[in-house]
Image (tube, rainbow, N blue to C red; front, side, top):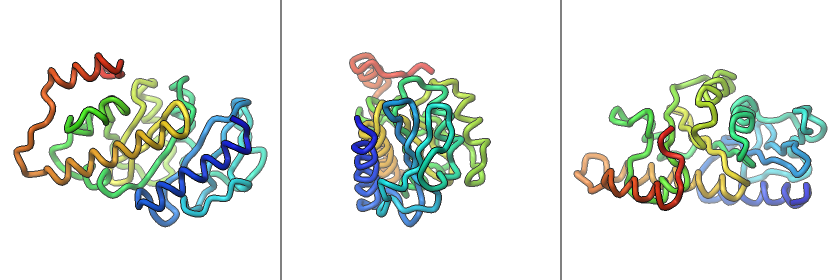
Length: 215
């Protein structure tokens, strides 16, 4: 995809996420790999609802900012995914309400953040790692992602928000929407003896859709 078309797609999908309340104000950040190995990144302090294609931060293949505005302060988080997952073509970070709420619940499994309520989060995300709370912009978030050695495509930052890497910008956005929707279901079902997928059903989904699951 050309640089110009990718810029338009980044802004279009970001606005879609914003318009549906999946992030708010100037929260969240998004990035995508360009054809020449560089990155397009949302600038710091910008709203997903009003991103300007011409002002996206543009990095070359060496990681040098070559045009656009100053990038998000969460760059270490984005580069950690690109550096550890060769398949990553885009990274999205939101402050979506239900995922953040679920991260605060005491029963949450840190190694497998989302309960197996439907097959779709399993298919699109695999296991989601719950990471501890970090101050916004702390490079330690990137260090924590690097510590996973590329074995997870998605993490949840406790009391903060989800981060998802995908093969391209559309895949990353679709997957993070599935994360938020599953967290919403988990909150709706909290305190109810709901029927989750069985271990056998989970393994059937994993096998059929070739999901990264044992990491």
